[in-house]
Length: 52
Image (cartoon, rainbow, N blue to C red; front, side):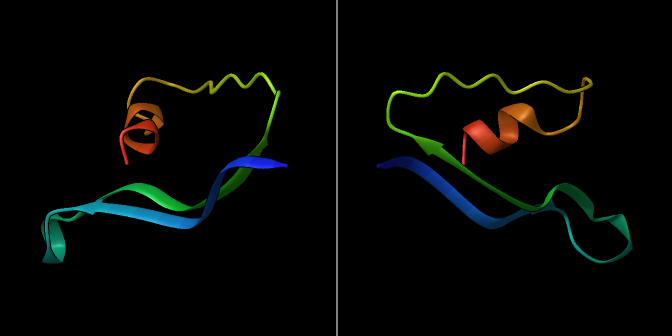
């Protein structure tokens, strides 16, 4: 059973030439009872995904 599902999520800050892509087409599913860890470099968008 799916508990959390993200499909093709995109998060962009700003507009035009100054825009910054924080999350670029991220998709994942977390099933009920699964334990999940999100790893990545500082500034990679981990907190952005979790706060969306």
